Image (tube, rainbow, N blue to C red; front, side):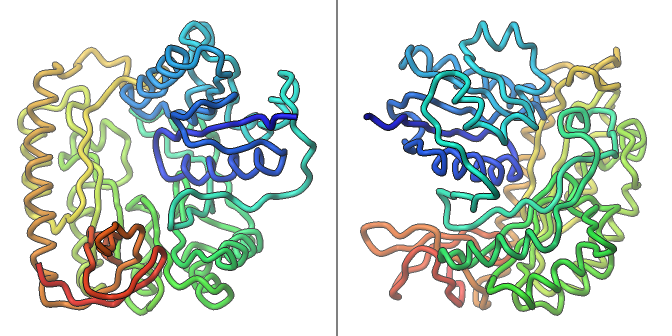
Length: 407
């Protein structure tokens, strides 16, 4: 009997990517056959996103594209987009099955109810990744309720994964050959399990697992404990990179967003982090066009960013999210002005990234090789999250190489 084939596509954050690896593994355990996304398959799963209007539309665009090219494919929309999207609209776009945040983790059972042959599975399955780095979910949910953000409605209250489960998963994945592990969650710094905080979790992962490199995904400023900075400064395993969202450099806008810090507090934390951690790579998110953002507010953001050593800047335009307080504001910024402001900050981010990279010429760091081309050129990311090309040495994917940057 022909095995049912299934493909996956992830839209959105690293947490979504980590969860897709879980969904992929559960379907493999149920006897389904994996296909690359885009190839003909019996089932296609879109693990969608609702954080921005663009991400939501990308999810629906993929659904329509699959149905146009492969009209007989059974399309599953999973995650935030299924949880909060309008079911009538989604079905009209071609979605055959909606699997919300809880339901998606029972995907084989849902598919069995739709008539697909899926054998029963029991117990936890080891995530199945298509990448050279393993993404490990340690936390989910958020109760900060920023006025523009739909995530609390989509993912619920914060909850942390047991330390023992995280350690067990990393040990298993290390046995499969993974060497770098990216810790991810909605609000990473809120991790708490039986009195253990994020710093204590890091200490346990370094001492009780074979992980050679650990990396933190995005973390909120108000949850960055000084102990985490001290640990990163002293660690030989924790990558020297912090992604701390700013969102705005204007105190007026930060207050309207209901963020929990001021521009001065953000500046102070960055100064402390860069003082303590030699060669720190610093990422950030910045939003343009939040309702009521004046020219002066935008100028404050641009000025603050230009004065900070940001090496990886993610710029995005505000888009109203259903049910959020900001979406009800009448002081919406026109789209052409949003685009103009975004373009200015994107250009600034490129200049800062180039300046940060230049400072590494002649210095030594490490890279995890993620791919090697036919000419033997390896590609990967440094500890500080700079893209790296490596030539002139024997290498293979997942190798960790110490090197001195030249150009």
